[in-house]
Amino acid sequence: MNKFDIIIIGGGLSGSSTALNLSKKGYSVLILEKEVSKKINPCAGGMASSMKKFLPLNIDEAIESRIRYVEFRWKASDNVIADLSEESPFWIVRREKLDQLLLEESTKYGAEILMPATVERITKQNSEWIIEISNKHKFKSRYIVIADGSESKWSSYLNLGPKKPKFANTLSLRINGLGDISYNSVRFEFGFIKYGFAWAFPLKGSLNIGLGTFINNTLLQNEELNNTVIKSFGFEDLFFKKIRKKLRIWNGFHKIHGEGVVVVGDAASLCDPFLAEGIRPSLISSFYAAESIDKCLSSNTNDLSSYSKNINNEWGKSMAWGRRIAEIFYRFPRTGYQLGVKRKTAPKRIAQILSGEMTYEDIAKRVIKRLLMRKERES
Ligand SMILES: Cc1cc2nc3c(=O)[nH]c(=O)nc-3n(C[C@H](O)[C@H](O)[C@H](O)COP(=O)(O)OP(=O)(O)OC[C@H]3O[C@@H](n4cnc5c(N)ncnc54)[C@H](O)[C@@H]3O)c2cc1C
Image 1 (cartoon, rainbow, N blue to C red):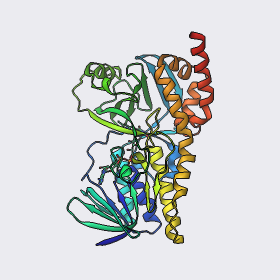
Image 2: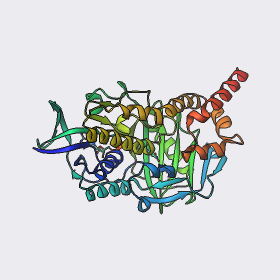
Image 3: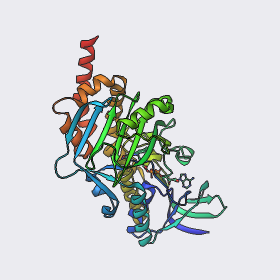
């Protein structure tokens, strides 16, 4: 049975970046990925450029547009445009390319990748993990990283993360052409989707369109409404392949480490419950997961608790506010749009959030106070 320092379950963004962080430190790493290759990843690819500090490689090849303007609309009108300044703090990456770059770079540092390899059984003997894949092959390691995404089976099996994960429902498509979106702009469209919103993020010559709802998904089944939204981005031909995906969203502070195991990315329920941002927490969790495992392996200890602590501090605190904002904003979206987006100072704040300069925690108290005062005046 082949033995590794670390086995990573899932070769998506968080699995591949954890693999690169660890293989760069000289550890033997095996990635087990159930898909052979990714066709189109539904991820729209929007990410803060400030995440460079958590990226273990240069990703220029995967960046397809550098965003200067963020446009917000309410039912295809009432526009607000935020200028992100000339430094383009927001990028659109092609996710298939980004994951591929990370995987390739990991192999340069010695990581091994097995695909297709669906993990079917995880057991522990003494202090070693035994991982069995679908063809009954077994592998051993001292540490495992659970990176099997939003449909994660293994996080709950190991009692890590929320007992009852909360999901957003998404529908996405990639369309050739940019419709009426400019190459250096992204658009957020509110008002059409109940308890959610739609987005259009440009790649080179194509557009990632998405619809997301944070409370229920009945509206995403409504083809007429979906088509209205797609048309609002400037498209007439509506026969596109649509991908539906559930996205695990942040749902409270939880332990995401155990003895010899950490959970990263979507599997750890880290997606932003307001805007569904998941690239940033995937990269942050991969970074801290690798740091904690490295500490244990290099000092021959086994306390991974610094990982949960770091994630709860660095990400969770802001998400707790993001969840509160989402609850109020999506319940009273018209008021939320008027007070949260149409205010004079809003474009600057939005730019600061998207670029990672400001957290929800920084702005939440102000926003919530404003919304509550307005509701009181109205009732
Ligand atoms: C429509 C949509 C749009 C989005 N847009 C954005 C955006 O613009 N910006 C942003 O920041 N975030 C966005 N996100 C969120 C972002 O895509 C996710 O947060 C990110 O992909 C999480 O990466 P991950 O590696 O944790 O999970 P994934 O990328 O889902 O990877 C998990 C991997 O595990 C593999 N796997 C699963 N089970 C097993 C098993 N048993 N054995 C082996 N392998 C297994 C899967 O095949 C998969 O490759 C979007 C999400 C959706 C659905």
